[in-house]
Image 1 (cartoon, rainbow, N blue to C red):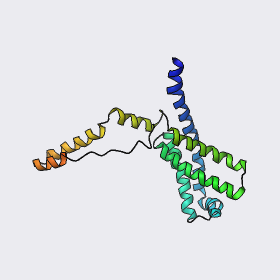
Image 2: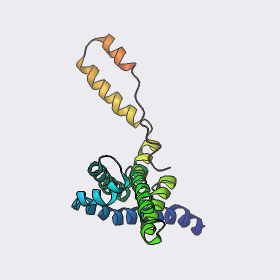
Image 3: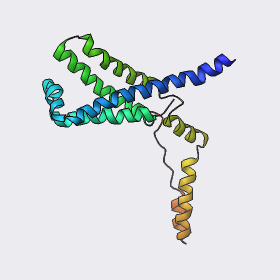
Image 4: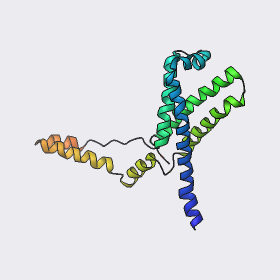
Length: 185
């Protein structure tokens, strides 16, 4: 009984937490290194691929590593952050293969970051994440948005004395947030 309780609910989610935090914490410094000398990075890594706007793409790479790392660490928009990291690692792996061939010493770190980001995209951030908390809030209180918008509608209608405007406002539908694809499953 204890084995199924602890193993399924805590250890798996703790493993996702460790994977997210370590991937983000170790990758974030690569983004700051790129920002430290952006022109050098553009000359060494982007221009050999003959991509347009090498400095702009270098800023995008650094931003995706820094922003994606923070999203992984916090567990907020985790799949979005992991997707940004996955894109950057895909280009980096391509660069390593084009410029140096299949050199395992260049590819191993890139492949580990790629595998971590890919796993996080497929498996989700786990229970110890902001995404999980947000999803639980919306799941347990499914009328959360409706209650907020109906309260705002009541405030708006109390200012207006016209019954026709009350009926037209009351008939408007609330909107749904498309969180399901980026939040914990």
